[in-house]
Image 1: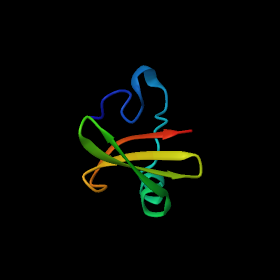
Image 2: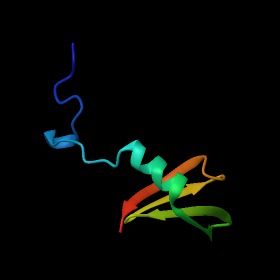
Image 3: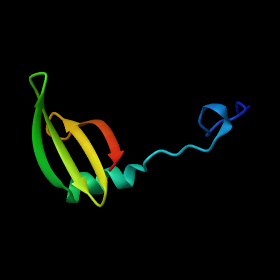
Image 4: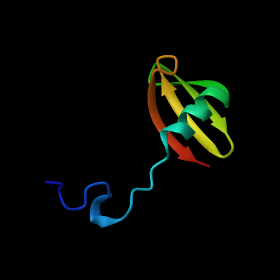
Length: 67
């Protein structure tokens, strides 16, 4: 039995997340820069209005955002 609302965000609205393929493309082809926050080095990739922030050499995605 599938729970009611499966595959939708809270409130029944369709999910509006950023597809994994977009995140991977930004990391692979975006312009990287480094920033240190709380003694942790983060790499910020930017491409076509998207920004992806990673830690540990791109192994952990911290956040994604449109700008």
